[in-house]
Length: 247
Image (cartoon, rainbow, N blue to C red; front, side, top):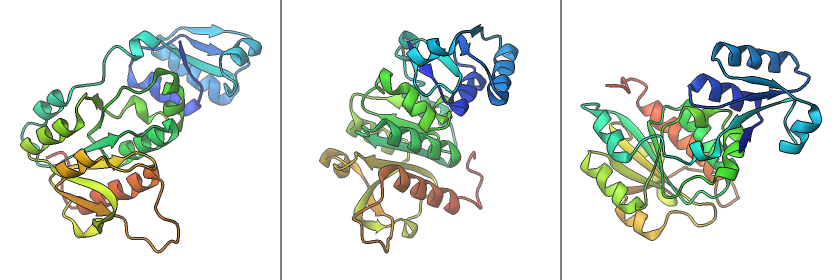
């Protein structure tokens, strides 16, 4: 089983309507009692347990845990890339994010949080998130993992080709790229983010229309990938601020 421990992660998972529960509670404080009330409204079972029971399941439980069925978590992604593109219809603006081997679950979670904040429509990855990291991802994302649509594919280069056929411009984040604000990021746009320490793989770079970079005055080589993601997503939102992104 997977147990979510962060207040935000638990609350957002319950609000999302996805299957979960029971909620395990021991000596609840005010914040935990609010979540218990929410669980009651959503008809999620609440089990009173001892603190020692929660200690055995998660060291950072803060008096409350939400059980998520591991088999259900692994059953299927939120949607397929094909479903996403079909659902776009005539929308002129859309933002997809392709993650190329982001292996740190905390980075993954932080990226999802930025995706939620800046209106990313879909996150595409090559491999399924490792189930044992689901609680880390959910907690780091402050529950955003329950809301951001995610798809998985066995072939990321092919996914980029499919996005291009659907009218997306593909931009890879790379230190040697053009300053991000110089590119027109309105319309159907896909941003490719490379793995920690490795960057974007050669095949994906070859499928990008251009490479973009965040201008910097710092002495350190580059930003952490999750920080870079937030900056780039903000620039997309800034450019689109005068347009309806749901057109």
